[in-house]
Image (cartoon, rainbow, N blue to C red; front, top):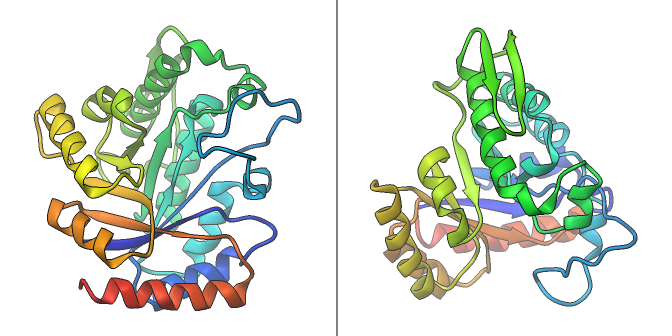
Length: 274
């Protein structure tokens, strides 16, 4: 089982360059970072975690700028979005951003995607929350076409363009892996459009049942990465027994000193299972 980090990179925590170097030095295999373009002042969508929305949601850096900075100072670290909000993203621009990251990193980009929960945020991007699932599916299909076809063309309900050229193409073929976030409502997306499931940090006993249902739906052995797990050896052991491909420890957003100390502890936990 592989060990990575999931976090929010903001203007108030450790910088991406220092973070990337620290993760590679401690032999973590991946970094997945969250995305929010903005937070509307008048927000009615409840925070899924309950209570007040944490400050980190207001202050996230752009994920592709951040991951490009990390790419420049690392050699092995996988660079993932966890998650990119496809319902709020132009598919042509996004296809170029992911492919560019994959190129400059030597094929280390991972496109972690999701639908999102903040209806007011997505509405500011012109997205109707009621149709966001269909929109995401269609944009993913268009992005795949842009990555893989020399002359890409797409005509759908939400995305429509005549033949276009788009370079660079991704280094990895046929394209960077797509990790689909979400619960069971996203299983069709994993099965039809994804390369792996980016699962929320459910307890291992609950996750086991969902993995079985996902693999039945997809009719294949879908790799699973578990997002934002606690630093708890018993929980890690449970995921190991399930055969998940990777776990992502949750790293709180803090300045450099506290972050380094916390990473040292997480690295010690990971080392127990290597």
